Length: 363
Ligand SMILES: [Zn+2]
Ligand SMILES: [Zn+2]
Ligand SMILES: [Zn+2]
Image (cartoon, rainbow, N blue to C red):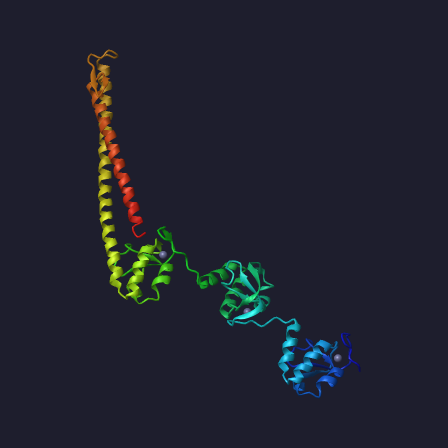
């Protein structure tokens, strides 16, 4: 029977390479007899008896086959045939490969967490959570869809809740929270030198990982309980730390930090004394306001008992005229109240400056 070419026929014997699945790639008995039977590569061919089909042994295929035969290398043929089978490439697992389509969850950055087309087709495509996946196109990479990841994905799918998957994946992305600098933040790990008191000097996880973790001096740093704070590891501090690391001498860093801490303690003492002065000044002002109020009541009483508008005496004070000595006292106290307000505001301004200086001391 002649080769049916691309026409579908029944009742003939078909052959396939042994690296294909049934029906993926077939060729007819005539082509087999002509091009395969007498070659050493015949061992890679399988026979199919009951099969309706056509012959895929086109002239292009034939050419590749003949090259493979001439070099006695089935892989030449295999590498030509396989990409034409419309199969998905197998999951590369942790191996880095090129030329397959990758997908990512839409809550990750490109390249942070990728999985291959095959895993997408098998586990993602037909689930409602596929809306959370992004097609990153064809690029090189590996597949992060390990069996553990798969398990979490399947749980998330079964509960129709992407957050289950997200909460599993995100901590594994190796993202560090950025250094907060002098800003107060919550929810990151802080470290302190073991020669300081709690809260005196802290550095953030990111700075720790970048500058401390892999140095011999890391033994002098410890993580602290509190997850809130700011990072004192300014560029000045960093410089001292790097010098200390380069000489493998913690005392260089310790000396620098302790000198600063000494200065901070001085500033804190001054701030505490200012707080006391502030509250004392506030008390004095309140006392003055009460006294002034009392004198004003007394002045009213004087006015009434003297019988109204015609004062018998006039008092002059500070360039003004008053009809009673109580009013003069009230005016005198007003001067003291104004003076007290001025002192209070000066203390407050000084305290604000100190607080600012303390907050920025490492910067
Ligand atoms: Zn044929
Ligand atoms: Zn995969
Ligand atoms: Zn930091």
